[in-house]
Image (cartoon, rainbow, N blue to C red; front, top):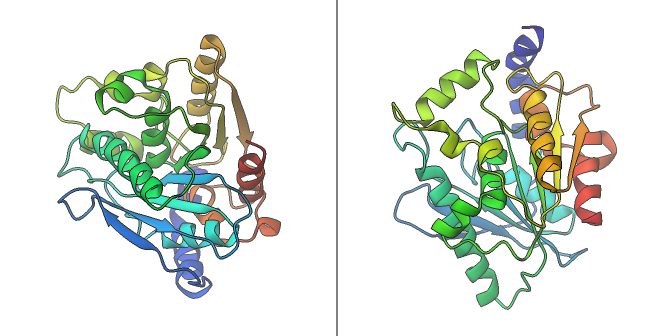
Length: 278
């Protein structure tokens, strides 16, 4: 309960930093991959690239809020770090029930690869990532053979998955907020096992980093432990990183870390270090 309260009172300082402490240095390119207003992605090209790796990121927001434009600060941060960056949007609940979200993420991923290839950009080293609801969706994209086959997703060039604060298992012990969000995401009677990363994960070559906080306030730390245990059982490489920053509630570490420099955020530094070594 204490961490839930801390999460809720963190919104004002987070939004204050977002509105008054962020700089817009890079202009993104918008690419629509569907007819819905949320079916687009933004591409960020750094001024000085430090790597030929490309980060493909799926935003969070409880499946019912957010879009790439709102999370522009993440793209700005990654471009400043010297990485090409794709920020994927998708249709939101409750108007659009699952599997609309994973359908969009899959189609956007395919469209982004084509877009990059058409620009002559090497797409042989991809990092897929996302926070919160975006961690849920991007983990399914990376590890569900069923979804990959259904939407013709080629993961052969994905060299790493980094999930931050994800609800990877739909445990009975979960917060009221998460129960409400899942209730909006799924139609009545839908088999939620068809949307649970823990149930869908199959063995493949992609190593994973799971960044999770024991003081999240919304998502239990055990969600990451559940997925890590499944990964170990089937032979997938997995590392759990426990958030050490004082700003360790859900919104602060899943998205708020991108509002800081690496020297001011151990979470961001871990995220970037892992990508550098992937």
